[in-house]
Image 1 (cartoon, rainbow, N blue to C red):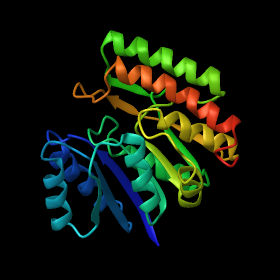
Image 2: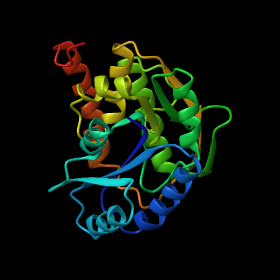
Image 3: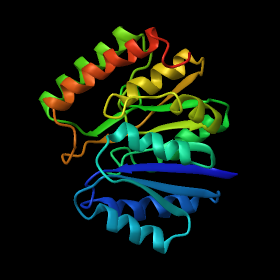
Image 4: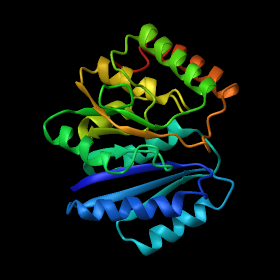
Length: 241
């Protein structure tokens, strides 16, 4: 079994993917652990697919999956996680909003026995190095509070892009997940709680990317709807929990 699988979903990431993948690979090489880096192209319309193809061709530790059309970040993460062969699985954003060094922070917790680890921007030792604009900050806080209260999510951060799981927990959780787009973070944390997996939070540094693919209007409304769907799936026993 591979020691570590790192999953990076990508949608129209030609502006940063080649540079950031080099940063990720250089760092993972320093860990002296057997690893794989999995890219999931979610139906990109720019040169993301060809960039991934070139990266995979030049590095035997890399492989890729692809969707013919854009299905959503949740679907891309699910595909990558379920295909992972690592004892530990970490997924993160292509823009490295959370720097790659925090993978080690996740691994330390996983190795200590935590089945699920999530990065948090809201712990005392966390740091916003580059903040979102005021409107995004307000919308993000409203969504965080809504998800916490409506689904009983007792964590300080929900949508931070860095999360890690022990392989058994990853398979158990993601094989049940149904949300394909931005609400997938809520669903994963909700399922982890219902399946009785302990969740450890770790502080991270955050560098907001102003090339974010999240559209405040339509995506914000859709994500609120997806939170309601999580509750509906649970109450109608569609998660098998």
